[in-house]
Each structure stands twice: as C-alpha cells, then as structure tokens.
Length: 128
Image (cartoon, rainbow, N blue to C red; front, side, top):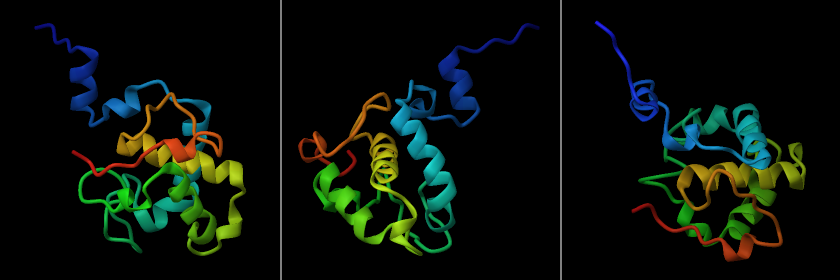
C-alpha cells in the first residue's frame, strides 16, 4: 500500500505550524535563533510556558496585546529582556526577537521585518 500526504497534512502530522512552514525573513530567522538561546529558559521552546514564566507569550491566553504595538513590545524588551541581563542583546537582536514573537502571534507575516521605522504602525491585537 502506497502512503502519501500533502505537505499540509505532513506538516500537521509532524506538529509543524503553518508559521514554521512559511518563508521567514532573515530577521525572523535570527529572532528564532536568539529566542532559542536567550528566552527558552523562562518561556519554553514553544512560548507556552517555561521554568520562570507560566503564561504563554504568544497566541491564546497571552498578555502580548497589552504592549499595543511592536514599538511598545520593543521598549519593554529594552528595559526587561533578557530578564537576567537586558544588556546581553543589542537593538538589532532585540528587534529580531520582537519580529519572531510577532510572527508567532500572527501580528506580522513571517516574511516581514520590524524596525523603529514601522513598529509604531504594527498593532498587537489579542488572538481571535
């Protein structure tokens, strides 16, 4: 018997989100790598929960919308993240992490980029 699956079915079977299968901008890809290095310890690999933070950081049940825009989220990261030392990442790296978070939340497309030039115009809405 021959078994075949469409790419979407295969992705679903493997637990890969549509975001993961989408084309990432270099910024979002960098943010994903930085998230893995600096953020998973507290927030978990999937952003749902980690050792230090029990509320999901993107998607349903999150508080990310409280920042209002990508600019607000970036400013929070400037002051507070990474929690153990906010100076561990430079601005470019923090923008990359913000882009990765927003792509996972659905506020931007994975192929998009975020910067000081457009961040105030990118709203962060509660998940539907």
